[in-house]
Image 1 (cartoon, rainbow over the protein chains, first blue to last red):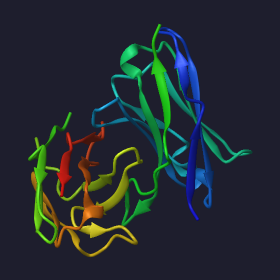
Image 2: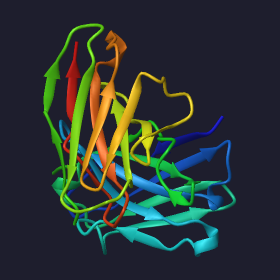
Image 3: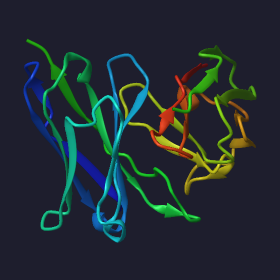
Image 4: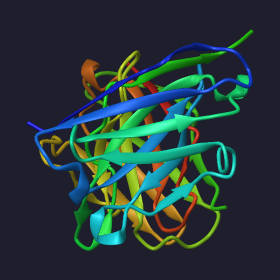
Length: 123
Length: 106
């Protein structure tokens, strides 16, 4: 079965850093786009960023709100994808989801979601 | 950025009802639209892509339609397990953007 499991969430002070990890199973992550989406408490869904697959050189796209602070990286040895978050702000407090985004009918779109990991930025 | 506007923000319906949720894009997105279902305390689940195509395993009581700027999600014969918040998402252009969500209560 295709599964994504996020980890690494926790409490961090404003200005601090945190690294989230997304462990993929049932598929090879490098063959798929991977998206990160977050959800602030009581709010809707916000796209954070995307890592394209190996064929696209693992290039990335980011939301303006996190560009320059967040970075997505891949790890073949562990079949995992990380989200490195630096210069964290209180408004980054959210549940963070990683999502597999395969190519379906020529278009990359989200299908399988992880269960999420909670990040709290507070002093 | 493409703005996605959902309506209503919430609705209450009875078991067996047919329910429709609307999503409007601020510009033409063709059929690059997806729908997700999120139950309380759970991760979202992918329901529909390309405006009208069901993901594998999604029951046929869910259907989607529309193209361009106006889209609908319809749930036929509403059941208690359909109580959730439903989100639309455009994947025509970066940044990918979601609607604000529609909470469906039974």
